[in-house]
Length: 168
Image 1 (cartoon, rainbow, N blue to C red):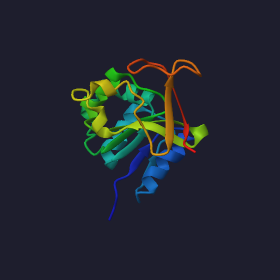
Image 2: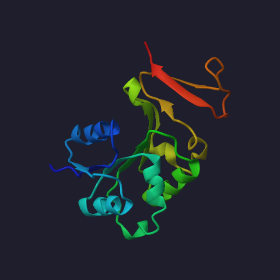
Image 3: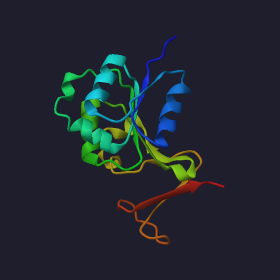
C-alpha cells in the first residue's frame, strides 16, 4: 500500500524529526533545499502531501502568501509546527485556511524531544480559544513548569517562561 508523502523544509536538527515521522510510518519524504511558499504550496498540491513539518515563521509566510486559495492543500492531514510559539490569531487563521490539521510540539533539541504539545482537536479557535496561547499538555514522561523566575511558579492564566525536563 502506497502512503502519501510528507514534506520537510526545515533545516538543521528539526530535519531528522520531520523525516523520521514520515519514514517510520512507511511514507516518502519530499525535501526542499530551502523554504519558498510557492514551492511549498505547489508541492503539497502536486504530490498530495499529507504531513508537513514546519516552524511558525513558515506558517506566517504561507498565510501572507496572498494566493494560497489557488493551491489544493486538501491532502494535508497534519500540519505540524514547532520550535517557538505561534500567536493565537495566526493559529486561528491557519485553522480556517488549512482546516483542523494543526499539531503543535513544544520542545528543545537539548532535551531530546518534545515536552508539551497541542493536539489537532485543541486548535479549534471557536470551541477552544483559551488553548491557542498555551504550550499544550505535557507529553507522557515530561515535567513542565510555567514560571516567572527560576523559583517562582506562574499563576494560572498568566504568561511566563515554560521549562521542562524528563521525569526521573
